[in-house]
Amino acid sequence: AQKITQTQPGMFVQEKEAVTLDCTYDTSDPSYGLFWYKQPSSGEMIFLIYQGSYDQQNATEGRYSLNFQKARKSANLVISASQLGDSAMYFCAMSTGNTPLVFGKGTRLSVIA
Amino acid sequence: NAGVTQTPKFQVLKTGQSMTLQCAQDMNHEYMSWYRQDPGMGLRLIHYSVGAGITDQGEVPNGYNVSRSTTEDFPLRLLSAAPSQTSVYFCASSYSVGQGRDEQYFGPGTRLTVT
Image (cartoon, rainbow over all chains, first blue to last red; front, top):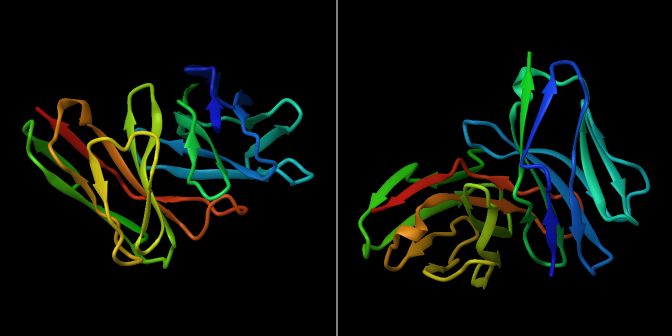
């Protein structure tokens, strides 16, 4: 069975600093996709970044990058130059085979001015 | 494109009542899913569909029913509401799953309270 673990219920970061949100995953399927979503207080789910299991390079999308360590089964999200608007819940998720996303429990990020 | 739409946005039910949460997408996506979000639990998959006429159970299917008669619509039925079904419900859709960068598009959510 697929499983996503996010061990940090809450994180604080100073504005303009970088922050890493941890995500580990478990699957026996060699082909999978890893996703990060942001959920602000308004409630909508916003897609941030994707990493495929066969991708050779770490994914980057603007200020977001994914530190993908396949052997350790980790897919940590790095947010550079944090902004106040980055305060939100962040979810790591995985898709394998023919099934939709399996989500972790999330990390609440608070950016401090 | 309207994307993924959900109705209603808010609903209060009494224990034992039934209702249907509506979900529609206009992106011609084959895959549609229903999740529920509870505090501290992340999003958990209730039911999903890989195409019209095909549905399957997710992690927490009990007490819910789905059908997929068209590509566009994927309603979620609560058969006899219970307080444990108080949650925020998200519908999502995607062109495919598990086959590359094909993120799921989420609706705005329905906040359901069962008293």
